[in-house]
Image (tube, rainbow, N blue to C red; front, side, top):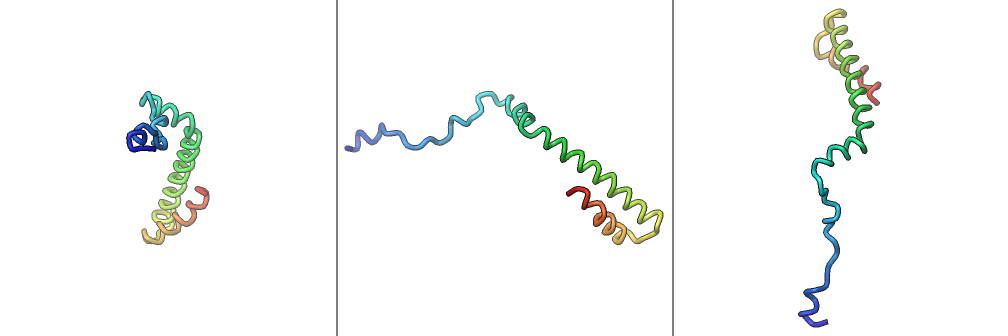
Length: 83
């Protein structure tokens, strides 16, 4: 193959076919593909915040533990439901 013929040989694709033609469709596609997971993780986070803050309030204000000890206990107890 001489040098003038090499110019017309196409190399491997750079993935231009994967570019989204309509950028507004990206959020809809992300919601369709990952919306259920997003909602599930959000619910777990919400429950974990409520449980953790309730335990922190109970240990610090009701039981009277120092802040650092109350925080460590609240995190240790409230972290396992998140998993």
